[in-house]
Length: 67
Image 1 (cartoon, rainbow, N blue to C red):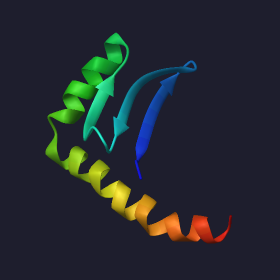
Image 2: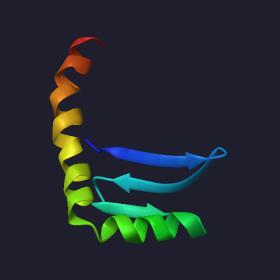
Image 3: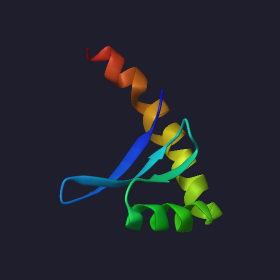
Image 4: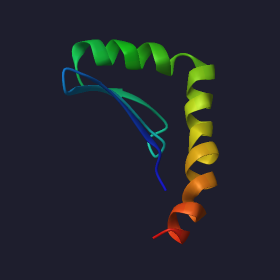
């Protein structure tokens, strides 16, 4: 299971957090700056890493049972 949170502006993805990578990745000039700032903040990184357990792993059995 992988948790991905993407940020878009004008239909263009500029930053993404992926639980398999474990950090933010920027795709535009502004996105690279955002990713660098967010990656240097341990509270943001730990919150995003915890989102996989709190959101994905919590709901996966519910989703499979409803398929």
